Structures are given as structure tokens and as C-alpha cells.
Image (cartoon, rainbow, N blue to C red):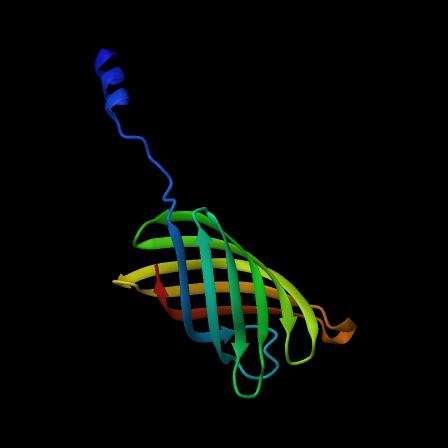
Length: 151
């Protein structure tokens, strides 16, 4: 029992990583539903976590030369991390569909995997409900693979 007490006293205390974290990246998107014809588009995003597990996420989703895409802003929560290699975030977003001005809301899961140095691969899956009247409302499910700079 004494040995267990000594081990508990000597064990280091885990502290949250309270540095500024973020990433900026761009890549491709596969729009699985609500694509209105084509499926492959582009994605760009920026996220920032100022010394907390909570952060901000700005993204321009599912755009190409024929579509202006979705612009979203939201909050993210770091659900799990094995820093510096892997970070899993949950995000909730609101925004607008630029092709036909319509509001949208949604969210998803974002996994960031460090490759080397500041270079990272970001896998982002999301579901966005675009509210555009009775006939135009759609659920857009998409998955993106981004190449990002992470700090």
C-alpha cells in the first residue's frame, strides 16, 4: 500500500497543452449528396484554437469553376489529441450557399494527421443542411482531404 501511495505521489500530473494551435489548408472534396450533378470540388479552411480545446473554424467548401460553394464559420472542439501527431475535432458550422443565397447549418468531424514538420493531412467529413424553400432544401454530405500547414 505504501508503494502505491509513493507511486501516486511521484507520478507526473498531466497538463493541457495551452499553446496557440491552428492550421490553414486546401484540397479536394467529394460531395456525396446534394451535389446537383457533379461530385468532385475543392475545399479551403482555416482553424484557430487560442490556448483552449475550443476554437474557430472558417471554411470555403465545395467550390469549383461552376459552383461558388458554401462559406461557413463555426466552432470546433478538440475531442481527442495525441499531439503533435494526431488531433480529432468536432465542429458545428453556420453559413451561406453562395450559388443561391440560402442559409445553412451543419457540422462534422475533422482529423488532422501530422506528416513532417508543419505539413499535415486533414480529413474532414461533414453534413450541411441548406435551407432553400421547400423544393430547394437539401442535405449535403461531403468528405474533404486537405493538405495543411499546422502549428
